[in-house]
Image (cartoon, rainbow, N blue to C red; front, side):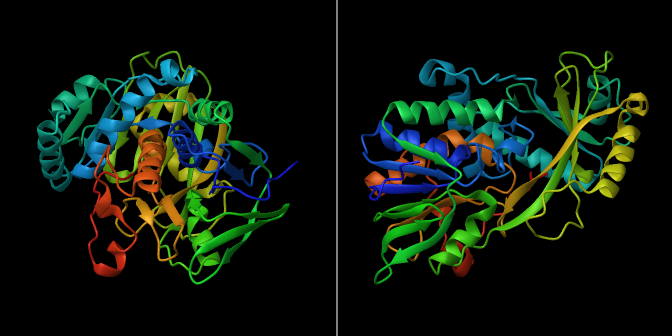
Length: 384
């Protein structure tokens, strides 16, 4: 491994954010870019452990606009990058089982429609009609957008990494950041487990580990890692090909087709922050029981695989883009469970901010680091 001793910018984190940023910076003409990933392979962190969902259905204008910019990038990914990412527009059907959520969903759909997103608001009966295999006697309402769906995370990451390499980006796995060199609150370089690199620009795209990277530079970044886990089933012949990505919103319980079976996940509301990525077998039983109550045919299903990963959670469930209190130290992290779907546009946005000093494709200036100290939080309701 020949780690360079000098770089124009070092990007920490080889998931979708870091890979997308590396590609878009190189495409804009920046030279001598170094992308570092601590795992043996790219995309093994939060990106590689996510459910692969992509959606337009959010409750804030900025998140909807991020989806409007990002999801079409998946659709044209093969033409631009040369990699098929298996975008499958199966649709998201988000179900409300209480009137509070139903009323909020109605407002969310109105906002989405005004921004050009054709989400439909469904009655409880319409939900039950669309999901005949599921028990949703308590469904009050639902929302559905056919353009929502799933994309293969590994293909996206490797597509961006390959395209970045072809543009001259130097990429390394198995390289962990151990320190950040500062001089008068300016980035001067980084230290790793395999050597140092002099640089005046550092992009923190480390996802759940972004807070730790911030600490190395003396910058407080309010991102906490929270474990989430998923299991998949054996093939289930009764699941139709057009089965949507279904979310039982009140339970944070979700399902989508995975091959010929199902992928099932559920948020543990009692989970405490931490970096544990082992599967909690006890909670998996709770998840399985909740899933069977919604899809009774799961009583005969077998678990095919299971894994856990980390959400990178901010206090308002929105990401952090842009500068920090350290000159040359940038951040793109904190997506609170919806980072993968916004990865394509986020890398482009960071290239704009780093090279032009402003965000052009989508105005995300309100999602800066200072908002937490200044009390400018923007709450996202549609987080599972």
